[in-house]
Amino acid sequence: MRHLQVCVEEARTIADPKEREQRLLQLESALQEAIIYKNRIEELHRHGIDPIRLVEAESSLTQPPAPKKVEALMTGKDRCKVCNAVLEPDLAFCPACGAEQ
Figure 1 (tube, rainbow, N blue to C red):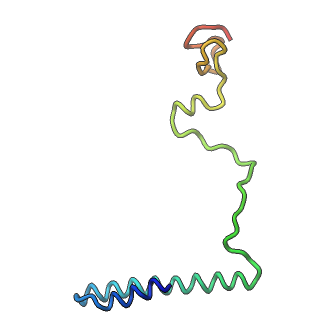
Figure 2 (cartoon, helix red, strand yellow):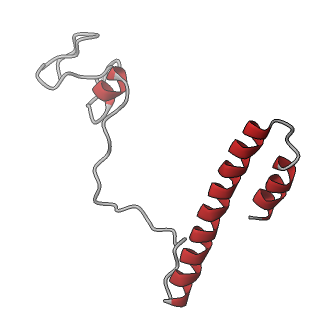
């Protein structure tokens, strides 16, 4: 909030009246939002609530899909014991070296 207040003082020195008015409105809006945020944080603290509490991710969440096709194909797939290539689930042999699986 102090930084915004300093910016307001600097904005008052802008020569162009239209630009000065626009900048002052922006800064006043930002100051109002900062005040609202500060008051809300204080209110939550008074009620014993920590608004900036870090939470652990739920372990039951499933992994998101792989972003690339190659990664999607390799995720959770078995590999060939001979050449370490990714195996297709519906094939009984390795598509890279032909070894039976």
